[in-house]
Amino acid sequence: MHESFEPNRSIRAEGPWDSQLWRWQPSKGRWSPERHGLPRTTVFLSLDTAHERPKNRYEFWRHIALYDIDGHPRRYDSPEGFQAAASGLVGPTASLFSYQSDALSGERTQAGRRSDGWDDASLGLLIDGERQHAEGDYRTITGPGQFFAYDAGRDSLVRCSRSRGVVIAMRRRVLEAALGAPVPPSAILAEIVGKSALAPFLASQMRLLGELAGTLCEADRAIMLQNTVDLVTMALRRADKKEVLDEENGPRGLLLAALNVIQASLSNALLGPEMLATALGCSRAKLYRAFAEYGLTISAVIRETRLKQARVMIESLLPEISIAEIGMRCGFLDPANFSRNFRLYFGVSPTELRRRG
Image 1 (cartoon, rainbow, N blue to C red):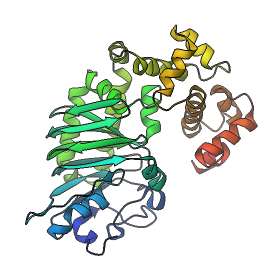
Image 2: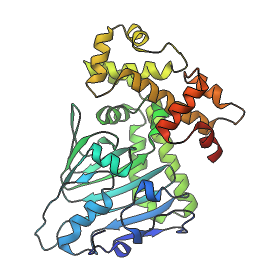
Image 3: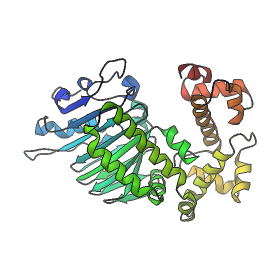
């Protein structure tokens, strides 16, 4: 950590800070998902640049607050320096923060993902300002009152004017369970949420919780954060994904349609390029190109989707449902092959994961 930073003054937290409940604490500065994990209960956290020296304020924010993006170096020569503040809730499966910040930019790269191991996705509501986002072939500009999304698992570039907003970060598997498919590109995710009939309710809920998070007791924090997560997942489940798809021409629409077929066909051992192409009414060559345009292969996406679904089932189904049966339901006919692939992908065997639960 930069020796000039004052984390105990610039980062303030309320809640139980026993190391058994959360290994991270404000004095440790930058949070790391691998070293510190997430709290076992929901806590209120706030941070701002006011207690840092003006010449160090941007570096503090870049190092501490932008934990899942590499902020671009900048110089602020004004007497007050860079100014930003954020406050909100951090829980075991999600976090929500309201923020205000001077202009900044940054990028997400493969090197960054290897460094921090973080690949969750966020949904945001911009209140003031403008946000530009480049991810793959997608270029989006978000204005006040609009939703945006950010995926720490994908390469991207973000530029923001002086802005204010609310962001909720959720575990990838929760979003995928709600979508019934892998998380799509951020532009599509934001569009799906924005077209949901529940979008106005979600926007109001996010703004209100962002404003009042600091006034809630510990029990109410957890309840309100979970309520917001539930509203996000409900909006995703009920959104008219077909409407978004119908507006998509070319690889983007074909890819998302293919992901939906994959999710619905995981138990079918014959699931593969031939079956997908037949179901979608296109040639295998066209299907391969649609996946390749986003750096994906059909076989890898099918395998990863099966493994992620298996993890959700292991964590949610009763122990009476055997690991072998869960593997079968997700298209793995050979239990040994299922266990081997699961360990390679998650770093833990299915049986070990169930014991932890």
